[in-house]
Amino acid sequence: MKEVKLNKVTEQELSVLQSELHRYNTVISTNFKQPEFAGQFFDLIMLIDITFRLWYSFHLKITKGSPAKGFSISLKPFEAVALLKCCTYHVENDAHGTFTYLVKEKYKGIIDQQLKSL
Image 1 (tube, helix red, strand yellow):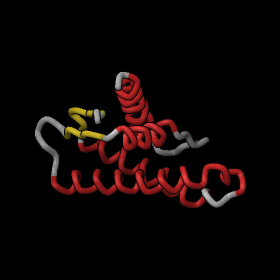
Image 2 (image 1 turned 30 degrees about the horizontal axis):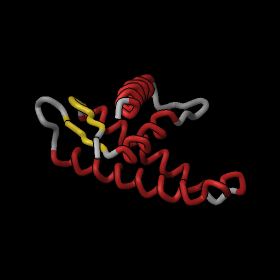
Image 3 (image 1 turned 135 degrees about the horizontal axis):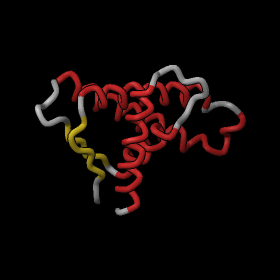
C-alpha cells in the first residue's frame, strides 16, 4: 500500500496540525450523535478514532524533539484523508490566526495532490 509523505515539517507546523486534529476530534465527538449525522454514524466513529491516533502520533513526535531538517511523516491513505478533512474544516470567526490558516492550506494542498496521485 502506498503512503502519503510529508517532509520537512517544522515543530510549529506539527504543533498546529496536532492542535487542529484535537479541535476537529472534539467537534466530531460532541456532534456525531445529532440526528443530522445519523447516516454517517459509523464513518464518524472511525474518523474520531483515526484523528485521535494521529493526534497522539504527532504528540509523541513533538515530545521527542525536533530534528534539524524537520519532521518526516508517513501517512497511510486513510490517515491522510482524515488529516485532509481536518485541514478543510473551517469555523466561522476563527480566532486561531493567520499562521494556523496558512499551515492548514499548505498541507491541504500537499495531501490532496499526493492522494490524487496514488
